[in-house]
Length: 156
Image 1: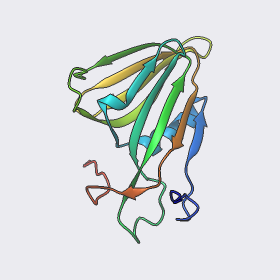
Image 2: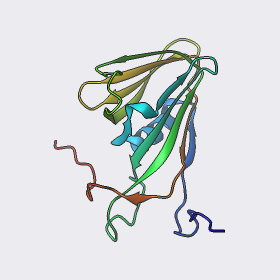
Image 3: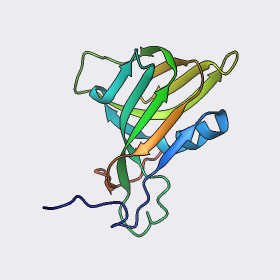
Image 4: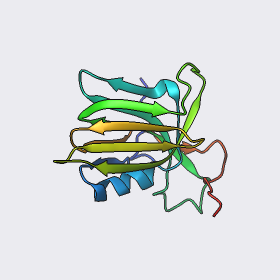
């Protein structure tokens, strides 16, 4: 019987992070910047009050990027305590649409509630109204070479 490779085999450490305040969110936002995902990998579970994305995120934390080609890894971004989900600029009828996450920001409301805004490339956005900020980011695959063979770049 064969086994899948593990992060330990490649001396990689999978991320498993949480965010419950604005400072924590900045770390997750930096790590998920330029993540891409098919629209079909976005789930809103209303009964569980959970919104989840399976992202192909660029490994910004990879210090060895200068020694090998840039990498991506599949990661699960889960937001709990979600009361409502709204989107704009996204054609949800196109199953082949690929979205690119530019930023995550939190607009606080009263008593810890607020809106988590996922800003997408191309003027799209997803707004999650949350009872409290509760986010996890967990790598679920081994890193792989970025298909573009380049790091994302944003001209100033």
